Image (cartoon, rainbow, N blue to C red; front, side):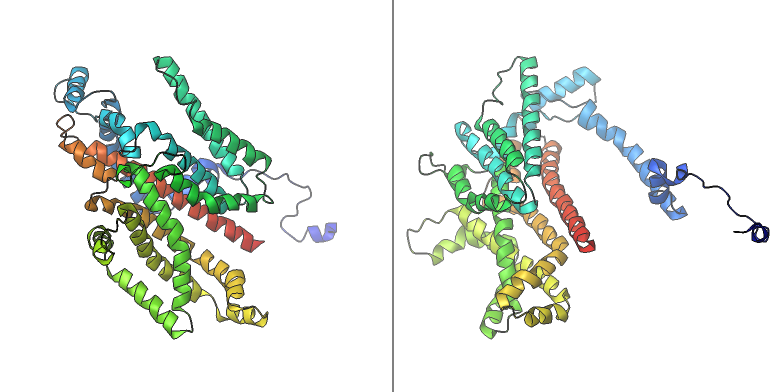
Length: 435
């Protein structure tokens, strides 16, 4: 720019300025709070009210659940005596000793104590089977196994400090965790993922023999199943079975074949119109009347079938919504490429429809997982079912909140993990679309 022209404008930069950091109020923690908590008058009022409510409730909750709590006692009377002796007459606190004493029962139900290593191995192998389905590489498995070993080391250190016998590092899960972690690091790349998928496909057979026994393993009756072990068996089976069945039902409902479409519509509408508890009662009592005399159909297997069918009907409607959301051009593009029906569904239509349906699918999974608590009504010993004998026991009679809070916390952890994975998957797919 000439000097003559520079005199006609108010300001001309003659030097290059270095980039400056953003204002403090618009970056970092202060910036986040300004944008999310105090961005407007109404937002500020809601934030202040929420903080006031938390400050009003949190001290009492911490005092009851943490500072005045008792973790080691043999009865509720001993809990109350300890609280009174420590904090004075009239003080209240949580008696977590009941969870400490019945923790094994809450996790395994009445599964034989000497055989509890089998559900542990089955759960660890479940993690190994899920990782290649949920992630592109096996690197998360290495992190998970590393975390498991770190937790085991901390527990072993606690046992050493308290003089207890160190058994946590000698179980088969430790050996499997080391082997799985090393394999995930060495042969856990994206190219080796198909080999891990083969393990996922054969995992149900391995889990069946580990949990129920057979071959060289001691058989365990289904009546011994309980606690979160029973919840995991019903929830994982229902989730794994309802997704492929729901896809088939959704495709069948949109089929051009009248018989296939009619059968799918009747099935979906009937299942959606009947409460799950009614289906569980049918599985528990009425199903034997329709079977040949003398047939002994396992009650857990009946529940698994009913829960899977129930969830598949809802899953079908979620996926049908994803199919309906696709523009007609996608179907026409598949036809223009000369693809057959199943090829177009597998390569073009379903990948897009399932991506659209991810929030609904995960929502159905979470609902199914929580609905497993209904099996307590047909006398199966899920975590809620295990509360009844504890409440009827004179040793712990009077403890209610601690049991419900513990069960709610365990369910929250599982459901929150599913929700977070759903968000992670949506972000990854959006990033793939941007590329």
